[in-house]
Image (tube, rainbow, N blue to C red; front, side):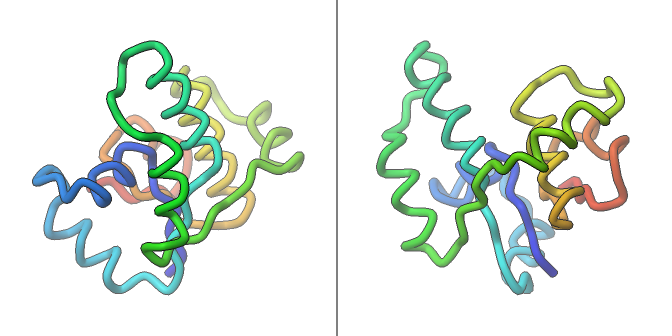
Length: 125
């Protein structure tokens, strides 16, 4: 299984947050490939600059590869996919992650149950 991590899941993994469930850990352990979107780094950069998130974004970006994950760049076809999505969720970063998951395809691992309305590729934990 190929997994795309929602931004908060990536943070939970890196910081070993207890919110990361046993089910999520099992999925991550059994995954063939795990991706972190460049949109997640963009989201963390914005939230960090606004004071809504206190993290070292450059370090988090560099850790993607060092912990064995893959970076998923935002590509034109991902951006075009966003415009075809129904208005289930308003957050532009989540909409991009959904578009990437559908386009690639990848399973999106998230705790946001609203995202499940987009596709069977969404795994909520």
